Image (cartoon, rainbow, N blue to C red; front, side, top):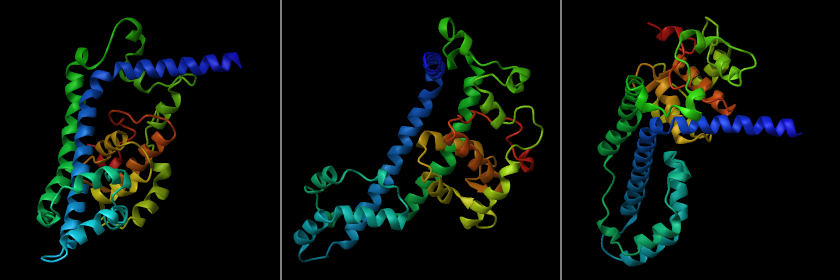
Length: 281
């Protein structure tokens, strides 16, 4: 029992040290993730305000209607969550939101501006992922600034040689992760799961052979993975950078999700074996 616990503590220690190594690299990711969270909250708030504005009478009984709306906020949130596929976690806390609304004039609330929302959604699903793709390049061009090194961190800095990246020691604690990312295989590692991933792809009703970013987001939200992880998975999967996923890109996306659900961290960049043959140059 002692040996088993000792092994667990050693593994936890290594994981913690790796996380500490990556702190400088992840600061930008955290800021972008916070920004995306604010965007999602703003979109949700826009829908709530617009829904309230639509339900307000033009002349009479405004105060009476305001009281009714405040009392029925939980039902309003649930209705919007279902109709717009917005996760309940994106909605504000009912009591706090109700308290803030009490002092506002509902008759002055603006209606929804679809074009503005479309621009924000485009930024979240297309522009930000493109920006994210620049981060690994900037980090690799300044290796001394992107990772903590020396002392206790020295043994945790990953090797950058091709031989070390893909040669697998079966007793390496990262052996499972290396196998999932291709190891010494030459074929596309996702291929053996492609048929079952294709069934999911078709069930999501692709248009012209592709799934929109919104559709994929709604599906991935059901995995309960954090937004930061889903953000990284989308960045790796949207190889064409068109804000949509075809069947090969979706299969890769689902494979990366399954990796993470099996406690194997997704890579910062795709190994050659993870890239679909249709996307290889």
